[in-house]
Length: 82
Image (cartoon, rainbow, N blue to C red; front, side, top):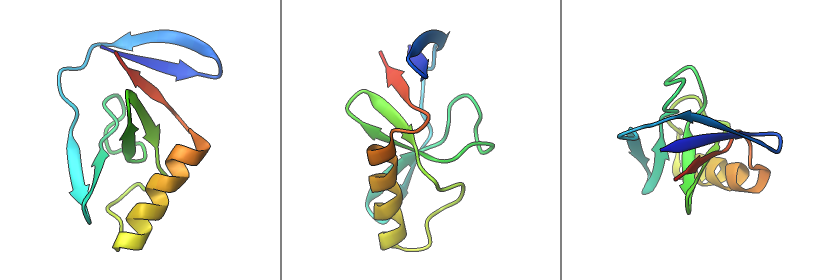
């Protein structure tokens, strides 16, 4: 089950059975389970998924690391895995 968290309010979104994962330069990214490729890639930290600023595969290892760091620092568009 996954909940979509938006601006301090919690909403039950839907149940997911599988996240599509993508590996780039040793880092794992995920496709948005609700919006697919119409949303930025996600990264996971604990039970949370965060939107990165990447819409396509990173061009190099530094871009992949920077996108992950940005997502975790900014905490944009989070999903909580339950």
